[in-house]
Length: 107
Image (cartoon, helix red, strand yellow):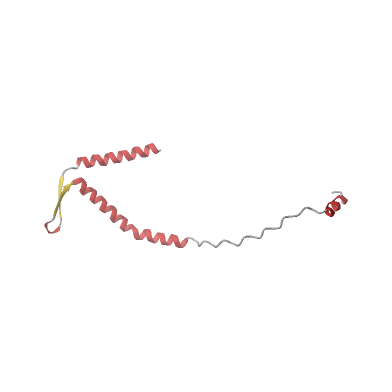
């Protein structure tokens, strides 16, 4: 199973690497007020992916925090440890009188 996972990771890496090599063309991004940014296409795609990742995490953060608060409230508080129980007295050996009474009855 580990071998299959590593093959999948290698496939994804080499696919993305080939994508980056095939997209080395220069692109120009035109911003507001006449500002332009000229760079390789792979960097534009990487920046768009990173921005989407950051926006996705920021969009999910309130929900994660709410779920965490609810989970913390639902955990019952830990009770303080109980007082140690009294250790019962160790039984003593039977007395001689107990033995003689048992023999008298035939037991």
